Image 1 (cartoon, helix red, strand yellow):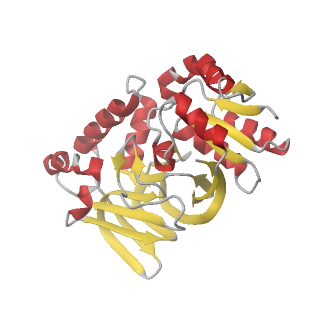
Image 2: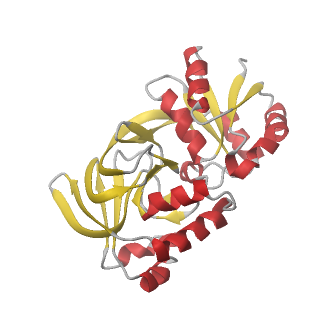
Length: 291
């Protein structure tokens, strides 16, 4: 049996993932699987490593970290015969949740050992791939806050950043076009979802599936700041979609034009610069995963 490469992001989970290397090795040894752990050294390193392993003919590359780590590894595995496997060790782990991968390390390793392959859709935005969630507006700003302020940790950290932006974020005006459907008005967020959850468990698209060939486009309109605080709990269970200023539609292609540059996150990772124009589309069954 060939050795399975594991790409470990030691900074995932605010540094807790780096302390799990021996636990990772032990979990696979108990399953009789030979593994080799490779630690990333900087942003983008996971993509380089995954490209190298795939080029050598690896059947599977394991990404150990959070949604950002999965995102980096997937950039290299698109269009290859190498499958992505997931060890959720990050702060949010929304992609793993959408795949049904257990948070428990031993159970996640067992899922990989069973080797059940499936094809999932991938989103593409301004030329960059994403696996689970895209957020433009308040979602992008929250992701930026989370990455900037090191005291924010885990799901509680996402929640604190969200509460902060509920009071601080200024709504933007945007035109959103999808096929023959067009929306124009004041918005708090544009979320193009491949899976149901973002930000460590905020259920923005309850019916989204990773393999349905569609993106779930969620739009949330402008509300006064005090009202936003009342709306916040509804984004945890998806019930915010019943609000008069919320809209959800399923689509394959999206164009957004905003009135000011905004942060955009892809699986929690920020686009290099704030943008006013965003083009998004779904690539059906574009990636093989183990789940």
